[in-house]
Image 1: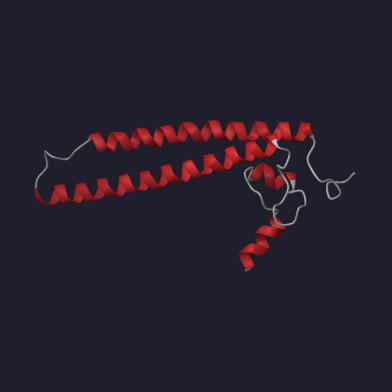
Image 2: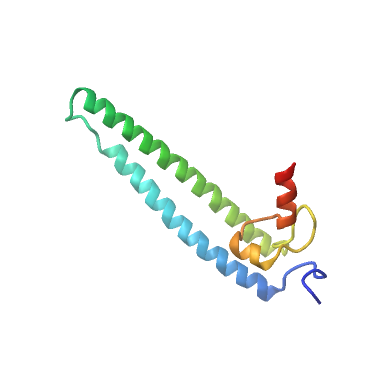
Length: 129
């Protein structure tokens, strides 16, 4: 049976995807931990011993760095939720099925974007609308 005719991936294939997602989750968790540690360090380090305009510039740079780290942490947390949701779809047997077309998402796409819920065709159609 060709991939176009199948309605779901085999248990063996799902296990392979589960391993890919698990590795990405582990990496994402360690990156988030690093980001939070960096954010914590930047909160601990003050620039109280500088004076005048230099302090204002340093405070501005510190504020931008904290904002960037916060945005990075937020994106990382969102990515982790998407990966965890993909794990749920593996457990309930709906992983790899496009929510728009009901067809199997290609293995190549799932390996590149394992948390996706859209086939490339559906994604392209979304971007045109």
